[in-house]
Image 1 (cartoon, rainbow, N blue to C red):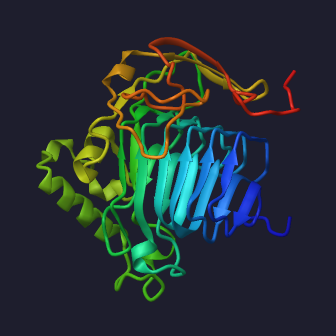
Image 2: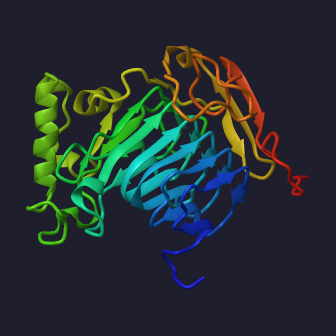
Length: 327
């Protein structure tokens, strides 16, 4: 421990090339869960349980992939996102359960001039996940600009976040963030963009995207207040980005919990599961249990998921030997 903010996680690597992080229980750390930094090409993070860490569940920083983050359970970050990254390109997030994190489910941006413009925030792919109950938004991406582009998402099942549970809490729609205004991007002479990417410019880009999609004025947010948060609903997210046309969202439900001590997930899945269409992702051929993925996979890590009550014990990970048994 040498810093209150960086270089520490449950698992932290620099120069993690062709590496594999699989089958770990990473929980209750006052830092990030897993952090790969400064070159990680050809690596994979798969079938880990990452629960109740202070910052992000998985942090990807400074590099160009490919890297695969798949078939993990990432839940209950106390002050961070499920999967976070900056100054990166070619990252795939697929078939994970990204659940009830305190900030965003998946969030990527261009942050600093350490990388070239073409490596700022490019080719982020968020496919076939269960992104449920994250408090601020499900996904945060930049609109295409000088330092970001080709960031796509589809085949996901969403559920909105919301306030702490009480008997009067109702359903809340899933939100997404247009996150172009980040870190150094707004400072002249610091970022790779020739002019600062101000909130007004982001609003102009967003308006142009809605114009191209022919979104009626009555369905658009008030830009005077929108730039305070850059959040949109699923319909506007699809219109502005073209993403998640084969995804679906189900309503917030009360019978829904992940027990972090015994590492068990209990959730009632509704018929919205059948509205999601997932494509096969190259490189992912088995599910959480180690069973072959079907020709038409389901979102998330559990390919035996069905409509109705879902109860899963998440540790130990099937097929991974461990001496750490929970009691």
